[in-house]
Amino acid sequence: MSAFPLAITSIGLVTGVGLNAESSCAAIRCAIDNFQETRFIDSGGEWILGSEVLLEQPWRGKAKLLKMLSMAVSECLEKEEKIKTDETPLLLCLAESDRPGRVIDDDNQLFLDLSKEVDCEFHSQSRVISQGHVSIGTALLRARKLIQEQQIRQVIIAGADGFLVGPTLAHYENNERLLTSNNSNGFIPGDAAAALLVMSESAANNKPHLVCKGLGFGIEDSTIDSDEPLRADGLAKAFKEAVKDAGCEMGDLDFRITDLSGEQYHFKEASLALSRTLRKLKEEFDIWHPADCVGEIGAVMGMVMTGVIDSACRKDYTKGENILFHLGNDDGKRVAMVFTWQNGVAH
Image (tube, rainbow, N blue to C red; front, side):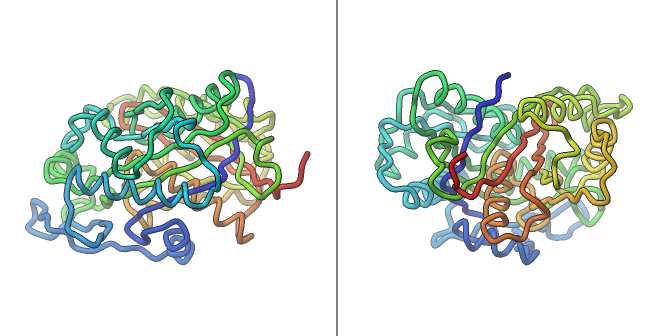
């Protein structure tokens, strides 16, 4: 994998704590959540907590995902002038195709419905990426290839996902993954949508922007449902690939942001992977996890993380300008990314 930096120049977010990027990131900065009792009850007879996006109408299922998605894409497009969508591929990130309770039964139809909803035609190189949390890594890799090899000017990465669905909640509760009155080692479900506009770093040099400098991938054999001892091999491999791709070392990075959402397994894995890859003594290597505010939001998590860091860098309250992102799926797929902040000065 050869380094080719990608600039993130526009972001749209719809989360349980805000219906646009600015309000969502402000709430997350203040550690505000929207965890409220949902209409679902756990096996102990208590209401399940969730972080639900509240829209002007009580849409559910596919209709709600489409509405949130169109809001996020529209916000992203409005912030960037002179975008020709017919020359811009849209990479649509969705939940894994085999996730229990998945409400989208036809990914391509959702893409067509989105085009109609936002009244835009997108480039023929558009794709649907149904890979859950790691979708953003796959999407950024594809965006890099489209921009570098096919001279496409920009790419939109967008996604929508939600866990507030009866069969989904039942599955995760039965597997002791959900935070309930009977289980403290679990996540709080949520829903969200997001969109990012991506272009080459050289094309965005005239203004401040977040840059993805490195990508790394790995496979963890000891998944959360496995009886194998956890060694964090997959995440450690992703870390090593990402920093190599970015042309730096782990010790050069200032802090981390991740998809951790409350389960002990993932905190242990993150700690193990860091211990196996960090060779420089650091007094502090902070870790941010926005799921504390928006809940478990699946395929959208990486884009929300990007929005949080973009806002933090613009408002200068980060722990530094070199950041490690990492995310993982239940099936063992892992992705790590190295991001940095550029103030817009040509270099």
